[in-house]
Every structure is written in structure tokens, then in C-alpha cells.
Image (cartoon, rainbow, N blue to C red; front, side, top):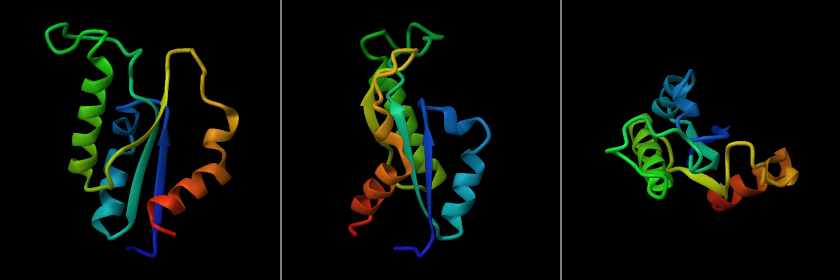
Length: 111
């Protein structure tokens, strides 16, 4: 367990890929414990190629993609809060408060 911890919190799967994926990978490669949390599984996302997903399968597809990304970045496996996206704000304000995230991270690290 590293003395250094980085917790990245994003709304949707693949949000981390746009600008921070390399940073997450770099810190992990330097020995930092890196965790990723998303608020949704991407169930309200667009389906660019219908052959790859249906509305019913999209959450599982997006989660699988994000788990692969975490493995590629070399960070801890994905953590997500089971909430709906796309304007249906079902995330209680306290779920992503600094205190709630700190407690959750301490649990994951066994503290």
C-alpha cells in the first residue's frame, strides 16, 4: 500500500479518458494508489454502433470498457455508485461530499 493516494471522481464512464487518463497512469506507474469512481454506469449514453450495444446492454458494455481502461492505466479496479445519468440526478448531495469519499476510500484501503 502506497503512502500516496489519488482518487479520481467522474460523472460517467470514459470521462477520465478525455484529459486525465495519462495522468492517472503516470501516478500509478510511480507507485501511487489510484482509485477511480464514477457516478453512473453510462446507461444513458449514446450508442454509436448498434452492433456493439443495445439500450439494455449499454451499462454492462460501458462498465466493461471502463474496467479495461483501469487495467490499462494500471490503477485499482473501477468503483461506481449505481445511479442514473443524463439529467436524472439521483445522486444525493452527500454521496460525493469530501467526507463521504474519504470514508469510502478508507474502507477500500482497509483502514
